[in-house]
Length: 100
View 1 (cartoon, helix red, strand yellow):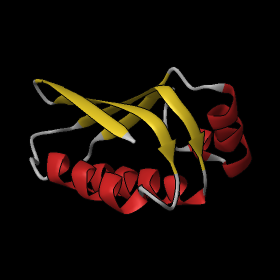
View 2: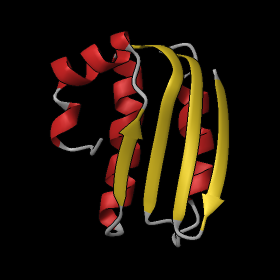
View 3: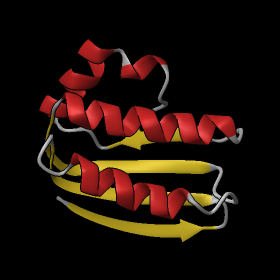
């Protein structure tokens, strides 16, 4: 799993590539929490173009960061989903709470 990030004002864009599964979920969670520790960040954009696979552990990572942002009045968005990841979003209902 590779994370790259870019900050523009109150927006943080994180590019994820590889697989977001139980093997790397803890590391991704910790890194994203470190980035979101700055309470000035009000929008998190996840660019998932390079994400090839995501399981329920990945859903948990996204839900936790969604809650963090919601508590501070922020938003979370995703873009560039692959076929498998889009199916996970559809089946899990993530689309109902996370904007495209």
